[in-house]
Length: 529
Image (cartoon, rainbow, N blue to C red; front, side, top):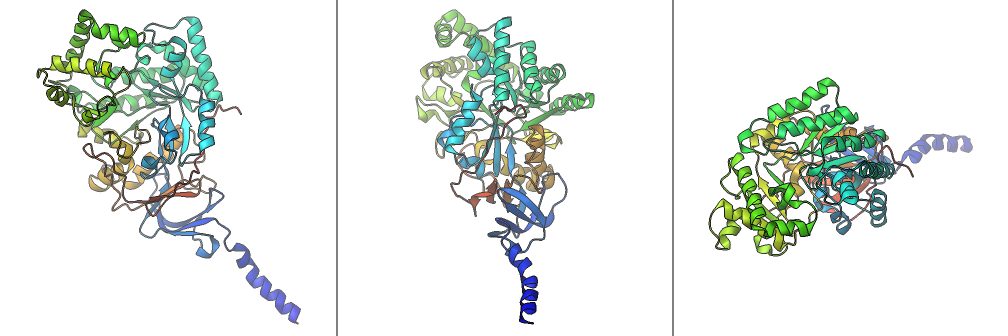
């Protein structure tokens, strides 16, 4: 009788005992936005071994640890499809500006610039460990530099073959696709057929073509059409980077550039775009000068800058561009980081010109641009350019196939005057454009940051809150989430994001970075071990 009673007791309590603490972590009482665009639901999320294993009603007793998400949104971790973390991530593997903005995954190697050896790059990140997941494109500019240096000409047949071989190897090493920066040297020297053939190689291995298109100002429509042409001829999905209209006379024409993309999709071409939600861009000072003047290496550039006739030609082209963009001077161009003289950081070119006591004229300012470049030994000078309209930002954001991306690296807190997008891109969308301006609904904004980019770059187990998927998760307060970084005071982390998990490990707990490095390397579909 006692034995029967004992067996009965065991039958009653053993299932509960075995079930207890069967999950590493359970997030309870939150409003779950799963990343599909569907309405939020109340649900708990269970995590085991870095994966989501269950979504529903889950007793707290079933977890080794619980997070009370009462009053919070529980969403997939944000995926930033356009980042530049080479070098900066190795220096700061915790990637705090990304993590505090809810980003759990970045795609780097954009705008044609990447590590030349993708496998070695991944090996270096694997050794140090990172707080975020990382995927990488192979950059066309990087490949062209390796084969042709700064030659301003078409490649020979053997050079084209060599570039294609480098792209093929990168795809086998794990690249997710090919990127171009056709506005930057030496990419600007490449004609469309060169890029098409390289894109074909990336397509062969299941890659994506991501492009900083050839022009974002007066000739933006032609540049969009070129990207679409490359998609058509190479039979490759295309991501047009930081989609914008950066020319005053064309403000409001984003409806037409968006229609070009939509027309391509109706044709059956897989074209999408991304944007950062700001009216200013950020790139190098050299983008102001004609690209032909930067050909053939630094010594050739210095000769051109110092030769009076050639310098006058450069200056004339710069002034013509100013005129075409309805600008009287370079006050729209603000220095973000100038190592030879950090007092220039945060000043525009016109202000620096005045500070130096030079004549107040666009001609003098154009000369100053060349002087600043020469003083910096032609090293990259990071700038912020105020060239866009709020109307276009909102038009592009309304387009359903627009993703959110920062176009940033890992920012060092307090260093220079970087673009505020490095700190607040996602929070700005959630706070300003969802909560305040109601441009798109919350669930749709989350989709743009999660499942849409995961689909674009074939991250098959990320971007959704779904059983079996990686536990990349962000918890935020939709009523308070906000970007705090401004152009005047750019070094400020996002507020309102309280928890960030990467592969099931809390990287942010109650707003504080834990220092954990649970990020993974995300290989493209052509990866060969």
